[in-house]
Image (cartoon, rainbow, N blue to C red; front, side, top):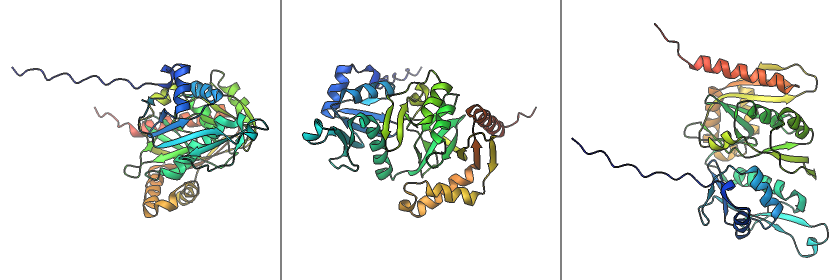
Length: 327
């Protein structure tokens, strides 16, 4: 009788941010040793502001954190500007590796600046992926890519869908693996603006919102916490199945219409951060994603109507993907 194979060592569950005490969280932030992971991206964050620590604790509670000194793709910092500005209209600045890509903003906008800065890092440096400015959600392994300009209702629609059974991969950025065309997740908080904040409060009363910050360059903003399941499943990739260009129109009946593939290609290319930088590879990968997907335009005014439309899309895709059993 052959001896039983030795038992494999247990793999320890990663530490999540919620397991850090508030004292340890603030200490790591002050030392620049809070290494936060969302999907394939690790951010080492330095900041001495207690309000930023509290908002991170609220919105990133379920995200893995690396041990102090662990690897990070990016090292970012929020810091106050000069001494005079600390007392007269105090401002905060975002730095990546000592470089400040943006102008300083009023200190109450510190967390929003951190989110925008982390997006900037990914968009400017993660060229191992084809990246599009688009929300992306998943159901039954299929991904719906939602590219749209500001004011189209993309983030509101994304937030509503992930609170009705869809999994959040990303609100702002679609990351496409060129080798497989699979879509990777980030599952970071959803950035809501202006009227969208109250709309989501009414639509999903249990949703967790961070601080509401008025008078930013994007108007009034607040970040909505990603559902726990989306964060826990962030490493699961998804196959492109739909490319849907949403547009909110007050009072409009829901309209889902086919879009010519060449039109979808051009519009998605315009929304891609690094399509030109990737050259031929960007062209080929984008073409494959288009070929794999139903390309659609979607006009809507009611989130409840939109939910029905998307549920029907998911059900039809599942039926088409499930082979019939022959007796």
